[in-house]
Length: 138
Image (cartoon, rainbow, N blue to C red):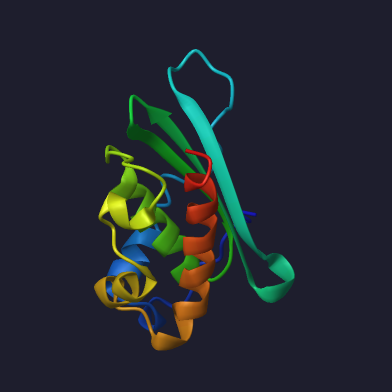
């Protein structure tokens, strides 16, 4: 996962997706045991054989998402959406185990906000499943 990426034809990507794809600052791992406070929860969904696999790791400190990292196998839209979601989630309060409580919307809203083609909705559902799997551990 997080294989070296080849720059896609920039004319084929929406400007916001291109900008996110070129700056995947939250890609990688969160160490489980460090001197940093908090607890790390992880969730994963998808299969590489089916074209999309996503793993999220969240460091939770005092009821807030202190850090988010992800590892993803998929198209530029998948990676860019993971990056956008990681940026949106950091600093938010975790009020229960519901993605909706974090106020970041749902895959259809992500698609609209990022200007993704409708054919990418299935990939966004994998992202949602991975994030929900992490939240189930809160």
